[in-house]
Length: 617
Image (tube, rainbow, N blue to C red; front, side, top):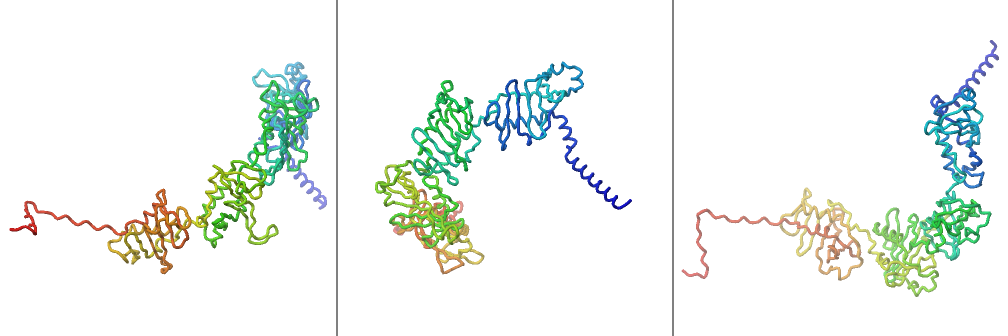
């Protein structure tokens, strides 16, 4: 055999092998083939782009565009995509219960009439690539829940479940989407509400809503979201008429009001006009929706939109704080100086006190306090008379800032305040306040400013000492008497001053408390009322790390609620000490002396009385 002939045969063999492999890959497997053979109809639903239903004289035609279904006949409107998808899904799973061969039908011409398949009133046609022939629906069979069906170009007849017939024999209105709009609340970026009281415009800036008209103010994200949801989740009650006729019967020739929703790139918007309440359906209201060009009825509560006023959707939170950019908090109280708190990674320091460690939990409490505080009243829309409210010279100002340590392309180095809250006069149960970047005067609870520490000493961290018990090697406790102890060999404690047997367990308990002592809270500078002139207890100790440096804690008078005032020489200011900690520091360190034995008297012995020194013989 010549080599050229061999090459040709080899090429043919390879080509045939590739074809067979390709052909086999496109053929369904045995199980799949059996399932398809049992189906009434087989199609690729992703390639179906149209559905035509002929139900007697009514023809319903629907087409899919951009993954959305629309009614084209007998009326043009938005179709219920979920309803059509459900129909296609049921068709995919529609199986034959029995097959009546075409030969049997040909043998008895009357059978098609008996089955209702000669001229059926109900027909279904799918449009699209590789779509099956038109499906003809006949009569119900004697077998319960079954019916006769066939394809338009075939006399072969199937006995199948009636469920598909229920999906198909609907009226055109049944296929109309009762959801008013496909727009979802999260997609709305602008809103215009027109009511008899005036016009209101809302604009979304980033993640938050702002009121643009009739005043500029922060919007309440939750309330505005609820307002939008009245439209975006609205369900149509009745399909009344198209909007090309006389709209006066519906109160829509001159609607009572409207709400227009704008998507991100939508300049025209979707307009919902609100008309009157139908006489026979007092629980509904006539509306006209521009994007669908029809008159519908919606639940009557929809007209609540017309009662919306700017203050109804204003953010009642005193201030918005973005903790992701918060780096500085400045508390300025005239006469008490400024306290500057600075964030250092996950911790906070008192920048105005040489970056001493701050009470982190207290800083977080302050932030949450401001984030959750709501105004009790919007007092003035224009802050033109600040002295009237004591805001020309505030009693307290709190500023929240971001901070950049270096220049970048976006920001310059330094502090950038983003919110300053000023507190003015007290008036009954409220105090007047103003947010620096807003022109309004509001009021908040009278007690709110009292929850803000204005003394920098109050911001100190609560940990007083950070040692290990074994690091303390000598200490002195002074109450009504003085007792000094030193750590000896084998970690046993001995008396350096005082007498008696040491209670080693109580000493260890005292050290365990003292080495990691925490304040309950900081009070501020010391005053005579704290009782340090006559202290309850003074405790000094030295550690092995630095024997020359003495640490001292002085406990003064009671602070109420079972606690005590105290101070240390390492920290400035007075703190509150808990009673359990005080009890641990006051534990008796010397064991009580053993009781003397009681003398015993022998049985039967007698004693003579000791004569008094004054008695005479």
